[in-house]
Length: 374
Image (tube, rainbow, N blue to C red; front, side, top):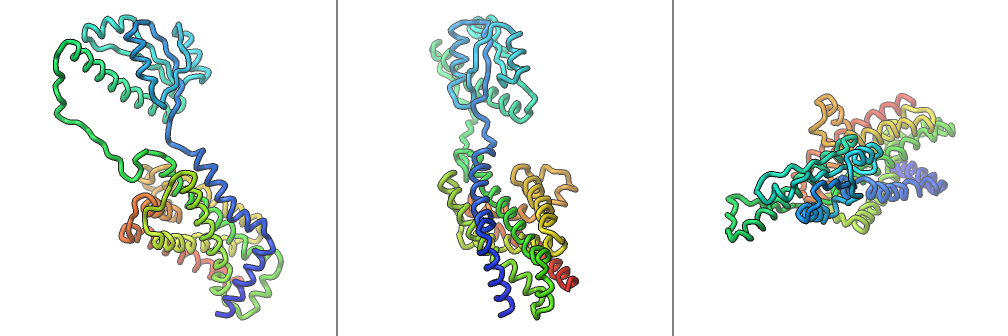
């Protein structure tokens, strides 16, 4: 036990001698959380739309005015020809052009279906699909209101619909993408800082040629690994607390579940992430190589294969199999369950078990490599 404590004290002293690195480990994840939390969003608003109104009647103007009374569409400009529409779409000045045909008011008065054309820029497929979805929904609402107004003018009582949808949104009533993304970002940034920090710990001893002194000492490889990682567990918990505080203050993301369960989940995650960092440190010979390997094995997999942005169930089966080795996959899922849904232990135990298994695997491999070096 005293050998383990000696390694811990030694690592704390090295961290204290390098306050810049300590600041980066704690502050950089918090800064990146603020930056990415505001920059990454699935909310598509203020879509610039141009209007070509061939009819130019009070009815067509009323239709267009109703369409733009929301935060989703901005009326960029009014056009006089289709040539102008093509030019604006080519230059990317607008995302779509609405074309109201001649005879719109006349067809509406006769009760006929009027086709309003929408020219949509499909270069960005996601935005184009969202734009068409918004247009369909808003046009349907406006059409229903027009139909009810015409029936009221004619003195006809509208028939009540047989089925009326009354949606109630749970966990994220405002449908804000930040509430979905921020817990995932916390997992990504904590993974990045933990792996990078520990990947440099043992390899630093190799570069300074002090690893031989440790190897000839009575310290066992298990004690070396635990002593090297224990200080970063404390740093990781401080970083987690800071990130949760910023998430609540800036994005309104409050922890709905148990703080005890959240702390246990974070500790299990840090055990796995730090074990991965120590494994990288044990197989590399320089801090530069260790840093590059840590970035490649933590940043991109955590971003693409953790479910942070892209749903794992939509990925090809081989890619889903690879994602089983990605620690943030389980941490991000557990964070979202605990923070947003107040999930109990029974809902996250599989994620904890997977992280624990990966942590044991990484630490055993690291201890084996350290023993071979000895």
